[in-house]
Image 1: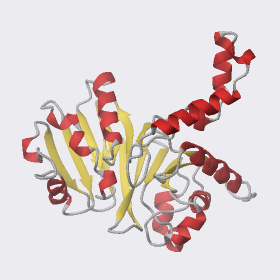
Image 2 (image 1 turned 60 degrees about the vertical axis):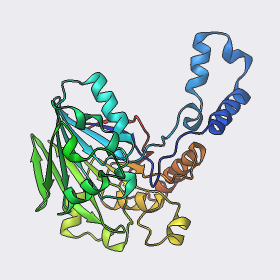
Image 3 (image 1 turned 30 degrees about the vertical axis):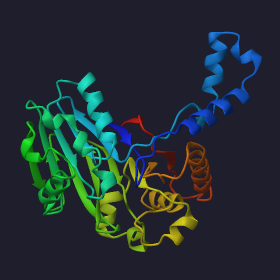
Image 4 (image 1 turned 180 degrees about the vertical axis):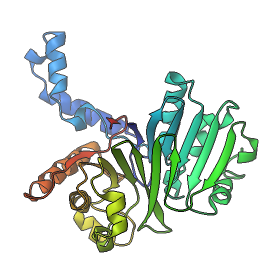
Length: 314
């Protein structure tokens, strides 16, 4: 199973500004020494030792995660602005891919903004399948894509498009199994778990963790216990989570606690606050990793920021 992150920002797209690029360049110049510039090798070594927040960026596109179980089809979680970049990459490197299976967590704008620019919908050789537990999914998406909001509606696309309302608890796609569970968020949201063989990944965006989520009920244990990795909403600091109670998002410390409670091996903090720059995001990652150290005797969890372009192999 190959997972790739194409959009990790929450609430609204957050492009890297000219001032932010200038500040990064200025910070790098302040660090460089003459010895760092004498050869190609020394320059590469200097770059490799730069902090992540200077050498790259967390990313500004909104939610979109790719999961690849086989060569001719792809599973996609959410249609944020990262969807456009994902489709462009697939068109360039995997033109043979014919089927997209798109699972929608919910219908807030930041999770749909890439849909109008999803070029695969114009291609008659493609199949696109939308999935959601919401019975009115087709009606909602048709409204989002109709005039005057967008000049082309679903009835004008050339791809074969189908809508599947999810019932029960799980479905199978090839040798992969996908299950879902409802989360706490205004208007509702669903987390998805994808399993292939002995490996599993959970995608849980737009989640406000509450006490009931930590209860070791049969359903919670079945869904979360011992997963290989979780991509989990960690938009706020703990103070912000208290200030914004019932806004539908979690803090990084609560996300760490949750991963530890259910023995999840790898936590990828997701749905990043749009007001945070790369330096702030790096600080949050350091704080979250420090926070895991107070849990001696409990299951270990590896904590990282979800970053655009990050690829996982499970």
